[in-house]
Amino acid sequence: MLYGICNLSIVPLRSEDSDSSEMVSQVLFGEDFEVLEKNKKWSKIRLSFDNYEGFIDNKQYLEIDQETHKKLSSSEHYYTNEIIDFITNKEGHLSVIPIGSRLPFYTNQHFLIGTNTFSYDGDICSGKLAKEKIIHKAFQFLNTPYLWGGRTPFGIDCSGFTQLVYKLCGYSLLRDAKDQASQGEVLSFIEESEPGDLAFFDNEDGNITHVGIIMNDYNIIHAHGKVRIDTLDHSGIYNKDSNIHTHQLRVIKKIL
Image (tube, rainbow, N blue to C red):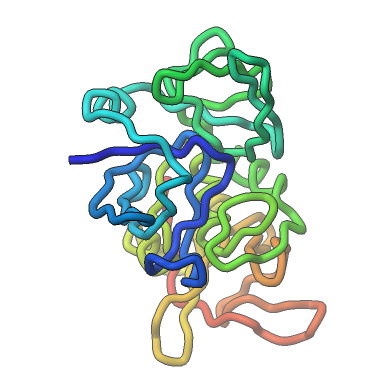
């Protein structure tokens, strides 16, 4: 079995083995994965963090052995907590990385990618934070442009947004909205919800296609065009700019 780790800032994860294929997600710096298939140019991978599968270019990751992969699974997770920052290798070369990048085997401002040592002296996060911190983390991404498959402050989709916010608080969500909706406890009414709970929305066919994070006073923060704050009621999301309901409420889930 082959394994790999992302040694670049942001790598597109595609639905097929082609540069013109749809980007379904992104692999962030320091994330590791299992290589399911490999051909001359492309590898089909399964991310360790959320079990999401897709194709990445063979030139855009570093192979690691099974022992390193196992150690990564059992070691504490440290993530960068700066919207954008840089790391330095032992030769002094800089690389830019986004918030939520993993720093494997981090200790005393140093970490490892394969056998390569890097230094990072920026703010980090690790462990589980209180539920009240979720909204504070979400505010960091206000006005981030919407990007299908995006997971960074340079472009993010609705479930990438909720996943990243929860990740920075120490909790794991699955990648897509429909899969995140399978997690947690169902709440019967909006009045039962707390800031940090998730609201899910469906389309005309009944498929869950959108998710956002509930705030105080019947507001919701979500990625729609950009990360924005709108009003939540029993019908769904009301956009005060366009004066219409943009999403139909399906279910509210308490994850924490």
